[in-house]
Amino acid sequence: MIKDLLSTNSLMLQQYNFPFIELETVIFFEWLIVKKYSFRKKKIDNYDFFYSSKRATNETGIKRRKLEKVISILREDFEIIQTKIDGNPKVTHFALNFENIVSREFIKYLYKEQYRISAFKEWQNFKRLIELNDSHKPGINHSLPNTESFDEFMDNFQDGEDYRPNNDIGTPF
Image (cartoon, rainbow, N blue to C red):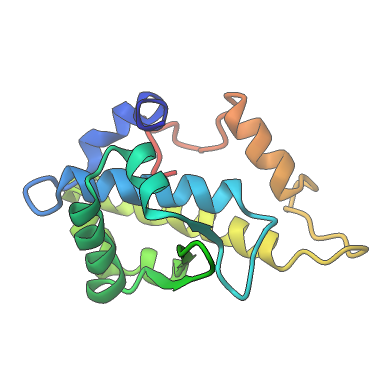
């Protein structure tokens, strides 16, 4: 639920560029990242995951029309997501574009000036880990430099292990 999403990331809300970005966009963006990780092993036709609009509105607390506007901004203005509506019942399939998430334009839009450099570095690291996970093939040892797999890394990160060298408060994921 949304309270779980924000309760773990409430300190990082100070990083966002709120005069230029709406809270609903931040909430949905965070939700997308959580879902990308949650569905990391279930990619379908180059889409990371699928969700019904009703369930997305229930989980984020964003009304349907506002959610459509936020999706449109992220899809058309910044091209950080691709969507398609498919299936019976109709669900929206989402694919995240990390090349555009780590772009200067999106980072500048999303974060306050004092947080942009650290956010950019953190997103670069997260992008590398996602690519490592996406490139994983059974029988091939794809590991991080310290021989820790992506799944072990994320499990440790969720357990409170702090991998960041400068120990800044908050992360964009």
